Length: 407
Image (tube, rainbow, N blue to C red):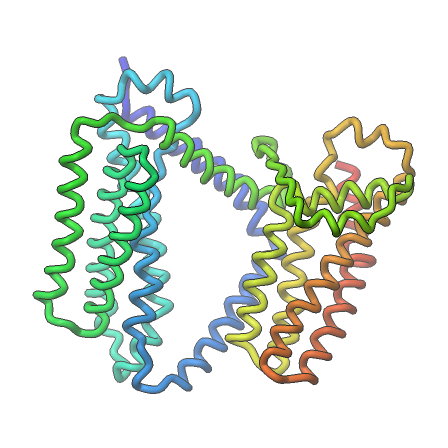
Protein backbone atom coordinates (compact mmCIF):
# COMPACT_ATOMS: atom_id res chain seq x y z
CA UNK A 1 0.00 0.00 0.00
CA UNK A 2 1.30 3.45 -0.97
CA UNK A 3 2.29 5.65 2.01
CA UNK A 4 2.95 9.27 0.99
CA UNK A 5 4.22 10.18 4.49
CA UNK A 6 6.89 7.49 4.34
CA UNK A 7 7.85 8.53 0.82
CA UNK A 8 8.28 12.17 1.86
CA UNK A 9 10.38 11.23 4.90
CA UNK A 10 12.64 9.06 2.75
CA UNK A 11 13.09 11.79 0.13
CA UNK A 12 13.66 14.52 2.71
CA UNK A 13 16.11 12.36 4.67
CA UNK A 14 18.05 11.37 1.55
CA UNK A 15 18.35 14.98 0.35
CA UNK A 16 19.34 16.23 3.81
CA UNK A 17 22.02 13.56 4.07
CA UNK A 18 23.32 14.46 0.61
CA UNK A 19 23.49 18.18 1.40
CA UNK A 20 25.16 17.70 4.79
CA UNK A 21 27.72 15.36 3.23
CA UNK A 22 28.99 18.00 0.82
CA UNK A 23 28.53 20.95 3.18
CA UNK A 24 31.24 19.45 5.38
CA UNK A 25 33.67 19.88 2.51
CA UNK A 26 32.43 23.35 1.60
CA UNK A 27 32.70 24.75 5.11
CA UNK A 28 36.17 23.47 5.78
CA UNK A 29 38.72 25.32 7.89
CA UNK A 30 39.98 27.65 5.17
CA UNK A 31 36.56 28.80 4.00
CA UNK A 32 35.25 29.31 7.53
CA UNK A 33 38.22 31.54 8.38
CA UNK A 34 37.79 33.54 5.19
CA UNK A 35 34.04 33.89 5.69
CA UNK A 36 34.46 35.06 9.29
CA UNK A 37 37.03 37.61 8.16
CA UNK A 38 34.83 38.74 5.27
CA UNK A 39 31.70 39.04 7.41
CA UNK A 40 33.61 40.86 10.13
CA UNK A 41 35.06 43.31 7.62
CA UNK A 42 31.67 43.87 5.99
CA UNK A 43 30.02 44.41 9.40
CA UNK A 44 32.68 46.93 10.39
CA UNK A 45 32.37 48.99 7.22
CA UNK A 46 28.57 48.71 7.37
CA UNK A 47 28.58 50.26 10.84
CA UNK A 48 30.94 52.99 9.68
CA UNK A 49 28.70 53.70 6.71
CA UNK A 50 25.62 53.90 8.94
CA UNK A 51 27.26 56.68 10.94
CA UNK A 52 27.34 58.83 7.80
CA UNK A 53 23.68 58.32 6.89
CA UNK A 54 21.55 61.48 6.86
CA UNK A 55 18.09 61.41 8.41
CA UNK A 56 16.59 61.89 4.94
CA UNK A 57 18.10 58.65 3.61
CA UNK A 58 15.36 56.59 1.82
CA UNK A 59 15.74 53.52 4.02
CA UNK A 60 12.14 52.42 3.40
CA UNK A 61 12.61 52.41 -0.37
CA UNK A 62 15.94 50.54 -0.20
CA UNK A 63 14.52 47.91 2.15
CA UNK A 64 11.39 47.51 0.02
CA UNK A 65 13.32 47.02 -3.23
CA UNK A 66 15.70 44.39 -1.81
CA UNK A 67 13.44 42.51 0.61
CA UNK A 68 10.74 42.30 -2.08
CA UNK A 69 13.16 40.08 -4.00
CA UNK A 70 13.32 37.66 -1.04
CA UNK A 71 9.53 37.64 -0.86
CA UNK A 72 9.00 37.13 -4.59
CA UNK A 73 11.66 34.46 -5.07
CA UNK A 74 9.78 31.42 -3.78
CA UNK A 75 11.09 28.10 -5.09
CA UNK A 76 9.40 25.04 -3.61
CA UNK A 77 11.61 22.05 -2.82
CA UNK A 78 9.68 18.96 -3.91
CA UNK A 79 12.54 16.37 -3.72
CA UNK A 80 11.30 14.76 -6.93
CA UNK A 81 13.51 12.66 -9.22
CA UNK A 82 13.49 11.65 -12.87
CA UNK A 83 11.70 8.33 -12.32
CA UNK A 84 8.75 10.03 -10.59
CA UNK A 85 7.22 11.11 -13.89
CA UNK A 86 6.52 7.41 -14.51
CA UNK A 87 5.92 5.91 -11.07
CA UNK A 88 4.24 8.78 -9.19
CA UNK A 89 2.18 10.26 -12.00
CA UNK A 90 -0.69 7.76 -11.53
CA UNK A 91 -0.73 8.61 -7.79
CA UNK A 92 -0.97 12.38 -8.22
CA UNK A 93 -4.34 12.67 -6.47
CA UNK A 94 -2.85 10.99 -3.35
CA UNK A 95 0.14 13.31 -2.99
CA UNK A 96 -1.50 16.40 -1.50
CA UNK A 97 0.09 15.69 1.90
CA UNK A 98 3.49 15.12 0.27
CA UNK A 99 3.48 18.48 -1.48
CA UNK A 100 2.00 20.18 1.59
CA UNK A 101 5.03 19.10 3.62
CA UNK A 102 7.32 20.28 0.81
CA UNK A 103 5.70 23.72 0.88
CA UNK A 104 6.07 23.89 4.67
CA UNK A 105 9.78 22.96 4.57
CA UNK A 106 10.33 25.50 1.79
CA UNK A 107 8.63 28.11 3.98
CA UNK A 108 11.02 27.37 6.86
CA UNK A 109 14.04 27.83 4.59
CA UNK A 110 12.71 31.13 3.24
CA UNK A 111 11.76 32.27 6.74
CA UNK A 112 15.40 31.92 7.78
CA UNK A 113 16.47 34.05 4.82
CA UNK A 114 13.89 36.70 5.71
CA UNK A 115 15.09 36.83 9.32
CA UNK A 116 18.65 37.33 8.08
CA UNK A 117 17.62 39.94 5.52
CA UNK A 118 15.50 41.95 7.94
CA UNK A 119 18.20 41.69 10.60
CA UNK A 120 20.76 43.18 8.21
CA UNK A 121 18.56 46.14 7.31
CA UNK A 122 17.17 46.95 10.75
CA UNK A 123 20.26 48.95 11.86
CA UNK A 124 19.82 51.13 8.78
CA UNK A 125 16.12 51.50 9.51
CA UNK A 126 16.83 52.37 13.15
CA UNK A 127 19.46 54.91 12.09
CA UNK A 128 16.91 57.03 10.24
CA UNK A 129 14.12 56.36 12.74
CA UNK A 130 15.75 57.46 16.00
CA UNK A 131 17.13 54.05 16.97
CA UNK A 132 13.78 52.25 16.96
CA UNK A 133 14.25 48.45 16.97
CA UNK A 134 10.83 47.69 18.48
CA UNK A 135 9.27 47.20 15.06
CA UNK A 136 11.50 44.21 14.21
CA UNK A 137 9.13 41.52 15.52
CA UNK A 138 5.91 42.99 14.02
CA UNK A 139 7.68 43.49 10.70
CA UNK A 140 8.97 39.93 10.76
CA UNK A 141 5.49 38.50 11.42
CA UNK A 142 4.07 40.48 8.50
CA UNK A 143 6.89 39.43 6.20
CA UNK A 144 6.41 35.76 7.10
CA UNK A 145 2.67 36.01 6.41
CA UNK A 146 3.30 37.65 3.04
CA UNK A 147 5.93 35.01 2.26
CA UNK A 148 3.43 32.23 2.96
CA UNK A 149 0.98 33.75 0.48
CA UNK A 150 3.75 34.12 -2.11
CA UNK A 151 4.66 30.44 -1.74
CA UNK A 152 1.04 29.35 -2.19
CA UNK A 153 0.69 31.51 -5.30
CA UNK A 154 3.94 30.12 -6.67
CA UNK A 155 2.67 26.58 -6.17
CA UNK A 156 -0.46 27.33 -8.19
CA UNK A 157 1.62 28.96 -10.93
CA UNK A 158 3.52 25.69 -11.35
CA UNK A 159 0.36 24.20 -12.84
CA UNK A 160 1.11 26.30 -15.94
CA UNK A 161 3.72 25.55 -18.58
CA UNK A 162 3.48 28.92 -20.34
CA UNK A 163 6.57 31.02 -19.59
CA UNK A 164 4.52 34.19 -20.03
CA UNK A 165 2.35 33.20 -17.05
CA UNK A 166 5.43 32.61 -14.89
CA UNK A 167 6.92 35.95 -15.95
CA UNK A 168 3.63 37.77 -15.34
CA UNK A 169 3.35 36.20 -11.89
CA UNK A 170 6.90 37.21 -10.93
CA UNK A 171 6.53 40.82 -12.09
CA UNK A 172 3.11 41.33 -10.50
CA UNK A 173 4.09 39.77 -7.18
CA UNK A 174 7.30 41.77 -7.03
CA UNK A 175 5.40 45.01 -7.65
CA UNK A 176 2.80 44.18 -4.98
CA UNK A 177 5.45 43.04 -2.49
CA UNK A 178 7.54 46.14 -3.11
CA UNK A 179 4.63 48.54 -2.63
CA UNK A 180 3.45 46.69 0.50
CA UNK A 181 6.93 46.79 2.07
CA UNK A 182 7.46 50.45 1.22
CA UNK A 183 4.16 51.37 2.86
CA UNK A 184 5.02 49.19 5.85
CA UNK A 185 8.50 50.64 6.43
CA UNK A 186 7.43 54.23 5.75
CA UNK A 187 4.70 54.07 8.41
CA UNK A 188 1.64 54.21 6.14
CA UNK A 189 -1.85 53.62 7.49
CA UNK A 190 -2.71 50.00 8.32
CA UNK A 191 -5.77 50.22 6.06
CA UNK A 192 -3.63 50.91 2.99
CA UNK A 193 -1.20 48.13 3.90
CA UNK A 194 -4.06 45.65 4.27
CA UNK A 195 -5.52 46.81 0.97
CA UNK A 196 -2.29 45.97 -0.84
CA UNK A 197 -2.08 42.65 1.01
CA UNK A 198 -5.59 41.78 -0.19
CA UNK A 199 -4.27 42.00 -3.77
CA UNK A 200 -2.02 39.01 -3.05
CA UNK A 201 -4.97 37.06 -1.67
CA UNK A 202 -7.01 37.91 -4.77
CA UNK A 203 -4.10 36.77 -6.93
CA UNK A 204 -3.98 33.46 -5.04
CA UNK A 205 -7.74 32.92 -5.40
CA UNK A 206 -7.58 33.73 -9.11
CA UNK A 207 -4.81 31.25 -9.90
CA UNK A 208 -6.36 28.63 -7.60
CA UNK A 209 -9.58 28.84 -9.57
CA UNK A 210 -7.87 28.80 -12.96
CA UNK A 211 -5.62 25.86 -12.08
CA UNK A 212 -8.37 23.73 -10.53
CA UNK A 213 -8.81 21.61 -13.65
CA UNK A 214 -5.11 21.42 -14.46
CA UNK A 215 -2.73 18.61 -13.59
CA UNK A 216 0.72 18.91 -12.05
CA UNK A 217 3.46 19.68 -14.55
CA UNK A 218 5.78 16.85 -13.53
CA UNK A 219 8.43 17.63 -16.14
CA UNK A 220 8.67 21.22 -14.90
CA UNK A 221 8.84 20.26 -11.21
CA UNK A 222 11.48 17.60 -11.81
CA UNK A 223 13.51 19.93 -14.02
CA UNK A 224 13.45 22.68 -11.35
CA UNK A 225 14.56 20.23 -8.66
CA UNK A 226 17.38 18.89 -10.83
CA UNK A 227 18.56 22.42 -11.60
CA UNK A 228 18.72 23.30 -7.90
CA UNK A 229 20.70 20.17 -7.08
CA UNK A 230 23.00 20.70 -10.06
CA UNK A 231 23.76 24.24 -8.86
CA UNK A 232 24.60 22.86 -5.43
CA UNK A 233 26.77 20.11 -6.92
CA UNK A 234 28.67 22.71 -8.96
CA UNK A 235 29.40 24.60 -5.77
CA UNK A 236 30.45 21.43 -3.94
CA UNK A 237 32.61 20.37 -6.89
CA UNK A 238 34.88 23.34 -6.18
CA UNK A 239 35.87 21.64 -2.93
CA UNK A 240 35.64 17.91 -3.66
CA UNK A 241 34.81 15.46 -6.45
CA UNK A 242 31.07 15.12 -7.08
CA UNK A 243 30.34 12.01 -9.18
CA UNK A 244 26.71 13.03 -9.77
CA UNK A 245 27.64 16.32 -11.42
CA UNK A 246 27.11 16.42 -15.15
CA UNK A 247 29.60 18.71 -16.83
CA UNK A 248 28.18 21.33 -19.17
CA UNK A 249 30.35 22.65 -21.97
CA UNK A 250 29.72 26.02 -23.62
CA UNK A 251 31.62 27.11 -26.72
CA UNK A 252 31.93 30.84 -25.87
CA UNK A 253 33.22 31.61 -29.35
CA UNK A 254 33.77 35.26 -28.42
CA UNK A 255 36.68 34.14 -26.19
CA UNK A 256 38.49 32.11 -28.87
CA UNK A 257 41.00 34.91 -29.36
CA UNK A 258 42.41 34.12 -25.92
CA UNK A 259 43.16 30.56 -27.03
CA UNK A 260 44.73 31.63 -30.34
CA UNK A 261 47.84 32.87 -28.52
CA UNK A 262 48.65 29.36 -27.22
CA UNK A 263 50.93 27.55 -29.71
CA UNK A 264 50.18 24.01 -30.84
CA UNK A 265 53.30 22.42 -29.41
CA UNK A 266 53.74 19.19 -27.50
CA UNK A 267 54.87 20.86 -24.28
CA UNK A 268 51.89 23.25 -24.51
CA UNK A 269 49.30 20.45 -24.62
CA UNK A 270 48.08 20.87 -21.07
CA UNK A 271 48.09 24.65 -21.36
CA UNK A 272 45.62 24.31 -24.24
CA UNK A 273 43.57 21.79 -22.28
CA UNK A 274 43.41 23.77 -19.02
CA UNK A 275 42.70 27.07 -20.81
CA UNK A 276 39.84 25.60 -22.84
CA UNK A 277 38.45 23.91 -19.73
CA UNK A 278 38.54 27.16 -17.76
CA UNK A 279 36.74 29.09 -20.48
CA UNK A 280 34.23 26.48 -21.62
CA UNK A 281 33.64 23.69 -19.12
CA UNK A 282 31.84 23.62 -15.80
CA UNK A 283 31.47 26.94 -13.98
CA UNK A 284 35.11 28.03 -13.67
CA UNK A 285 34.83 31.08 -15.88
CA UNK A 286 31.51 32.12 -14.33
CA UNK A 287 33.03 31.76 -10.87
CA UNK A 288 35.91 34.06 -11.83
CA UNK A 289 33.51 36.68 -13.22
CA UNK A 290 31.19 36.58 -10.19
CA UNK A 291 33.95 36.82 -7.59
CA UNK A 292 35.62 39.66 -9.49
CA UNK A 293 32.38 41.65 -9.74
CA UNK A 294 31.46 41.06 -6.10
CA UNK A 295 35.01 41.87 -5.00
CA UNK A 296 35.10 45.06 -7.06
CA UNK A 297 31.78 46.19 -5.63
CA UNK A 298 32.86 45.39 -2.06
CA UNK A 299 36.15 47.28 -2.52
CA UNK A 300 34.45 50.33 -4.02
CA UNK A 301 31.48 50.52 -1.66
CA UNK A 302 32.51 49.29 1.78
CA UNK A 303 36.28 49.57 2.18
CA UNK A 304 38.95 52.23 2.40
CA UNK A 305 42.64 52.55 3.30
CA UNK A 306 44.38 49.28 4.14
CA UNK A 307 41.03 47.51 3.97
CA UNK A 308 41.08 47.92 0.18
CA UNK A 309 44.34 45.99 -0.12
CA UNK A 310 43.08 43.26 2.20
CA UNK A 311 39.86 42.91 0.20
CA UNK A 312 41.85 42.52 -3.03
CA UNK A 313 43.93 39.72 -1.49
CA UNK A 314 40.87 38.09 0.07
CA UNK A 315 38.96 37.78 -3.19
CA UNK A 316 42.08 36.63 -5.01
CA UNK A 317 42.45 33.86 -2.40
CA UNK A 318 38.80 32.85 -2.83
CA UNK A 319 39.24 32.70 -6.59
CA UNK A 320 42.49 30.75 -6.46
CA UNK A 321 41.16 28.31 -3.89
CA UNK A 322 37.97 27.59 -5.84
CA UNK A 323 39.81 27.15 -9.13
CA UNK A 324 42.00 24.36 -7.72
CA UNK A 325 39.52 21.63 -8.83
CA UNK A 326 40.52 22.53 -12.40
CA UNK A 327 43.71 20.54 -11.74
CA UNK A 328 41.74 17.31 -11.31
CA UNK A 329 39.05 18.04 -13.88
CA UNK A 330 40.30 15.17 -16.10
CA UNK A 331 41.47 12.92 -13.30
CA UNK A 332 39.22 10.04 -14.36
CA UNK A 333 39.67 10.50 -18.13
CA UNK A 334 41.90 7.73 -19.44
CA UNK A 335 42.72 9.49 -22.70
CA UNK A 336 44.50 12.32 -20.85
CA UNK A 337 46.91 9.77 -19.36
CA UNK A 338 47.79 8.64 -22.88
CA UNK A 339 49.23 12.01 -23.88
CA UNK A 340 52.97 11.65 -24.71
CA UNK A 341 53.69 14.63 -22.48
CA UNK A 342 55.82 14.65 -19.34
CA UNK A 343 54.01 15.28 -16.04
CA UNK A 344 56.12 18.34 -15.28
CA UNK A 345 54.56 20.14 -18.26
CA UNK A 346 51.10 19.57 -16.76
CA UNK A 347 52.07 21.21 -13.48
CA UNK A 348 53.88 24.03 -15.26
CA UNK A 349 50.90 24.73 -17.52
CA UNK A 350 48.42 24.74 -14.63
CA UNK A 351 50.53 27.16 -12.60
CA UNK A 352 51.00 29.48 -15.58
CA UNK A 353 47.27 29.57 -16.26
CA UNK A 354 46.31 30.11 -12.62
CA UNK A 355 48.97 32.82 -12.29
CA UNK A 356 47.66 34.64 -15.37
CA UNK A 357 44.10 34.49 -14.04
CA UNK A 358 45.10 35.88 -10.65
CA UNK A 359 47.35 38.57 -12.16
CA UNK A 360 44.46 39.73 -14.32
CA UNK A 361 42.08 39.68 -11.37
CA UNK A 362 44.55 41.68 -9.29
CA UNK A 363 44.55 44.34 -12.00
CA UNK A 364 40.74 44.41 -12.24
CA UNK A 365 40.25 44.61 -8.47
CA UNK A 366 42.90 47.31 -8.21
CA UNK A 367 40.94 49.33 -10.79
CA UNK A 368 38.08 49.41 -8.26
CA UNK A 369 40.53 51.01 -5.84
CA UNK A 370 41.64 53.48 -8.52
CA UNK A 371 37.99 54.36 -9.22
CA UNK A 372 37.92 55.94 -5.76
CA UNK A 373 40.75 58.28 -6.82
CA UNK A 374 43.50 56.83 -4.65
CA UNK A 375 46.56 56.27 -6.86
CA UNK A 376 48.84 55.16 -4.05
CA UNK A 377 46.34 52.55 -2.82
CA UNK A 378 45.94 51.38 -6.42
CA UNK A 379 49.68 50.79 -6.81
CA UNK A 380 49.95 49.09 -3.42
CA UNK A 381 46.95 46.83 -4.18
CA UNK A 382 48.33 45.90 -7.61
CA UNK A 383 51.81 45.13 -6.22
CA UNK A 384 50.38 43.11 -3.32
CA UNK A 385 48.11 41.22 -5.72
CA UNK A 386 51.00 40.32 -8.04
CA UNK A 387 53.14 39.10 -5.14
CA UNK A 388 50.22 37.12 -3.72
CA UNK A 389 49.48 35.48 -7.08
CA UNK A 390 53.11 34.36 -7.48
CA UNK A 391 53.41 33.02 -3.92
CA UNK A 392 50.02 31.30 -4.10
CA UNK A 393 50.61 29.52 -7.42
CA UNK A 394 54.31 28.65 -7.05
CA UNK A 395 54.53 27.88 -3.32
CA UNK A 396 51.22 27.59 -1.46
CA UNK A 397 49.43 25.12 -3.76
CA UNK A 398 52.48 22.91 -4.31
CA UNK A 399 51.61 20.40 -1.59
CA UNK A 400 47.92 20.47 -2.60
CA UNK A 401 48.71 19.46 -6.16
CA UNK A 402 50.98 16.65 -4.97
CA UNK A 403 48.38 15.31 -2.53
CA UNK A 404 45.65 15.54 -5.18
CA UNK A 405 47.70 13.39 -7.55
CA UNK A 406 47.96 10.63 -4.93
CA UNK A 407 44.19 10.32 -4.53
